[in-house]
Image (tube, rainbow, N blue to C red; front, top):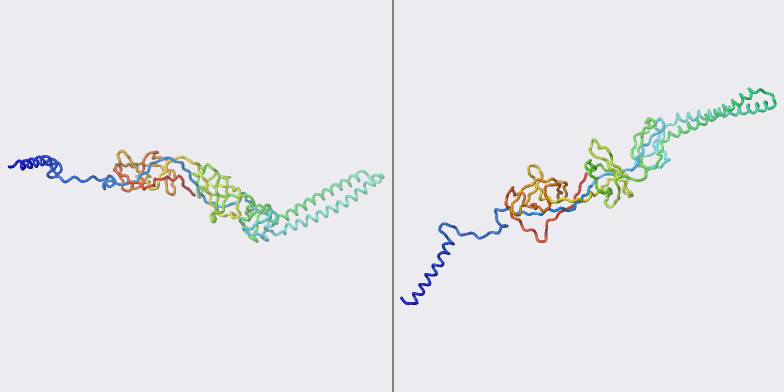
Length: 388
């Protein structure tokens, strides 16, 4: 064997000795080739979820109520004497003046009493005239000594009695005239007729309310709200009022009166909001919407997608970044918003809450975080609305 051939053979043996251990480690008998590494986010054994970090922020909420416009002062109008209704001159919704006649009773009895009072006054005045003549005669006679003192005193007494009778007759005449005026029903104050409870031909009693009159002047927006709202009212008592049929018509008011009792039928409390200025379009009975704002406070706000039901109670999934697992936790909800929920308890600031993929989770399960959309971060809404 030539020296060159021996050199090539020696190099081949050395190379084989070096490559054999590597091949032995790469493919042992009975073993499959090692699989290439798979990224965690593409591992089919893990559930992809999206998360958001819980933080506390200012929460302000509006309370939205529906009510109607009413007069601050309403008057029950009634006749001041008994009688039968002969005429009705107004209808519901009419605006009336203070001295306008609304209805009239049949005045037969009152007119007869007035005639009697007038006749009694004429008789009393005639007797007074006669008493004056008699007294003047007695006065002249006693000065000349032609009459007695008792006769003079009797004439003087008769004069005084006749004068008192005239005064009494005049008072009776005034009473009869006043009673006749009571047959005409007058409003007493300007306003709008809201309702009536009588018809022509009906017999009414003195003091029986037959009409309800809404007086001209300030107006209220009246709302029926649940008792819980009055226990924690908005911090600002200023209420913004808008007309339901035309939101462009707006006014501002302040809470003027809160009823101390709860309506037994509806379980609500009546709240009256006095309007600073009443637009003409906000007529009596118009339906309005009132908005009041609660005082700002700090709370944890989460999106609706984070809400989960566990043991028939609200809950959320908490992500453990160290173990990359999730656990379920019950929460207390303070208020539901349009696209978020405000928490009262259950989640502390800084904890990570799952917001997407919760339907595939179980306690202790390992998860992978899905990449957030570029330029998009989870946001929290700090406003909500409540209503009646």
